[in-house]
Length: 148
Image (cartoon, rainbow, N blue to C red; front, side, top):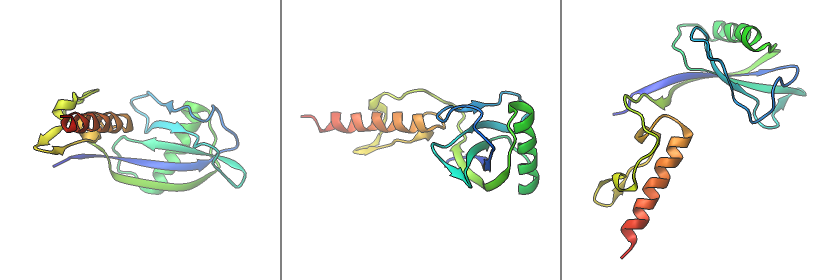
């Protein structure tokens, strides 16, 4: 059984980008709701850039209050003024909640039963990079097993 971490993703229009696309901005203040923000490549609404903001901190705020607080934090921490909230997604199963994390897994440790290989971010750490690294290790193990 896998325990899960939740997050909220909010998408706002803003007057202009404050940093380049492809950069992930991090808010390191432990009291902040905002964890990270970025501008999705080439996305606009009504001619204005779209800003994606992720909240990973636990809260009991309503969707409206969360959006208001995130907009205030964007101004306070980043100097970013929001225009319109486009979407809010509350994702209950965003990332696996892992007690132990790792950066890599040897290919030989991906076979969990005879001919059954496991891969996924839950095998290493909760991230897209971990999912890809785990999948690559499992693929290498499958290829090695297929060799005579």
